[in-house]
Image (tube, rainbow, N blue to C red; front, side):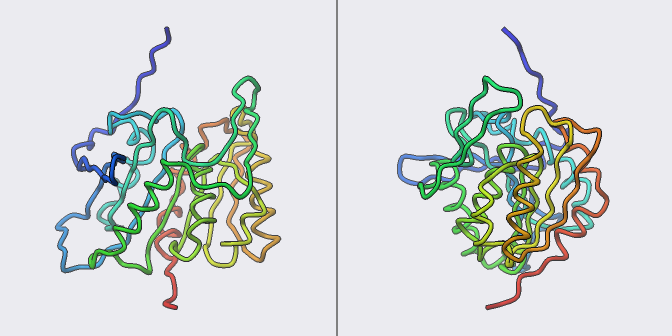
Length: 250
């Protein structure tokens, strides 16, 4: 049996443990608040979707990748950051995954309902948007691997909510980009040596966004394998770019 050690950030205690309950379903998530948080103020909201390896029910593993970045820049970019955790048996995106190939064989069925996990996330976002301390013009989403797939899908399903998004080593159905290409600025990342999720998927998503009138940023790291999130999180302009996108009021 192989045991995997997860690197949990030293500042894990800064992320409160939260539970979003809908009837018989519960979505576990962690939440980082700005320093000196006040409900009388208005803050950006960031949703971060983890990869398949961080699924579970411990409400901890989803902080393995990305949480350090938001803590590091907490003073520079005060925001409410949410890290939901996908159950082990579910997936953020509607993806048929064949793990018997390398890279994975991924297919995305059309016109099907969201997975239970993603649906719960969307309901949580809807609830958060009812709060007066959330800036509705600065709602963002990002994710890696399975979370990158979930990012593309939640944009397709809620194209009018997000002001900006980033997807790292993800995949999706390029034709769905028609729903959000002109509405949501994107930054897409991938490693050219990725032997888990073929980088061609990100190339195809960029092509789909361009086809439908979007103008995404795209970073393809020549030497990176699947862990291109390390390079993405080291990008000094990632968070400044993300928070610079402000949704115009309808």
